[in-house]
Length: 249
Length: 222
Image (cartoon, rainbow over all chains, first blue to last red; front, side, top):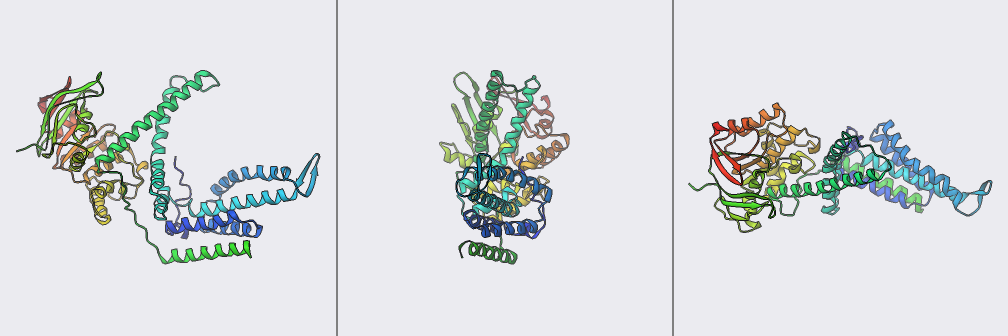
């Protein structure tokens, strides 16, 4: 259920401190997201590619994901030039292709790919568990971090529960169709899943109480910064500054 | 000698139409391992939950370690001394990694990080799972999850183990390992199980729940 395609690696990137990686992905990503100049976005793309290369992401898996991102972007690149006004580049029958529309569409597509590459290379290469702990250390509210942990932990259990109920339906020859019977049955299935999750949540809380839980979580995970973390952080800070220079100079 | 846990005439019902226990009396002394048998729905799990205050009795009295619990505060004190292991390990193990799950109890009891880490490694070796500290809990097999669930309870150093169907859904190998670990423990135990062979091997006493009451019976007769 929980995807960990890029997590098993032994590259420089995988060895970096998780907190540094999160910060190093978010900082340039934010800058690229607000950038208006193509030079800055191109710089972000180059940075993303460098990071992806450093993390030695599996090219086939990376391409599969890039295809998913750019499927959405393709729609934008086709539609935006046709719907925006301004000077026309060309005419297709009654439609005119706007130069400004094309520029903006390409800018958005470039931003999306740059941010995707940075985040996949730095954050996609760590387990969600590590990510949660790092977010907690970076000051994200504990409640949100624990919601992430519980989601990771129980998405699998709930999926099994769902699969079990579906099997029970299938052995009694249920086949989804466009019918009232199907809607009602799917309603029952979702309802049952909710009720069971509710019961399970209660049992989990009971089990936590039995181990002395009184409403407060204590962190036990430790992080340590090394020299390579400092070097990497400095490099990313410099790269982000360079992107800022490209944007605002 | 005063018993570790004593139930006096305890009754409990899930609403007026579903009485479960109707005047159960039971005493668990140090060194005893009591097997609790009975049909499904006879109130075995409810009885364990009554002891640690997850359920509250409708009548009679529950006493543990000389404490007559009056409210949640007293139950908190009882729970650190009576470790309850749940039927479904997925209910018990909620942390991302094995180490964090085992450390959860000790840290709640006020251990420092270092002490908790030491307890984690010590407990893992007791249940024969050395090197499992950084494993992701949801990726474990059913047998491994059960052992980790036992470790989370043992990590709190309880005086009494309350075990709810510990051998259910285990294969022969995992069941054998569990049996070996439990047989070597010195804590008093209250063991709910349908696994009569396990009860015969582990328990010093057996109590059968029937019709809401507890009837002592001989281990050999189980």
